[in-house]
Image (tube, helix red, strand yellow):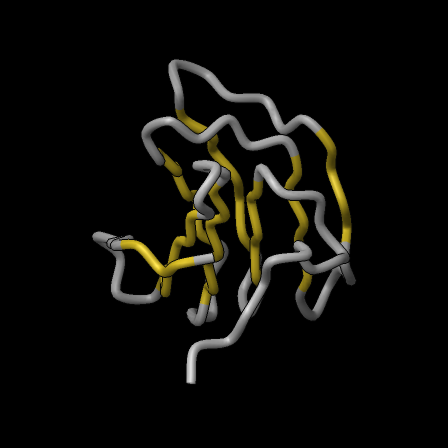
Length: 101
């Protein structure tokens, strides 16, 4: 997987995105604020099949086939939570996963 550009207009929301050679994509967000955040995620060409939420109030909640509307997915993130949306099955690394040196 290769890191690709991801931006947030909210300074309390840290985001990053990755893509694989086969165009599968993964998006990760961290809500570092003390308030819940409503997040609208748009990643062109991404048909996310899995969503995982973790944080102080829930641990590794996995949702398959998150619902997208008009190519966007909206989630509510609690304070300190992390959201992962992916086209790659979660809770296991892809066979071609490497950490750059």
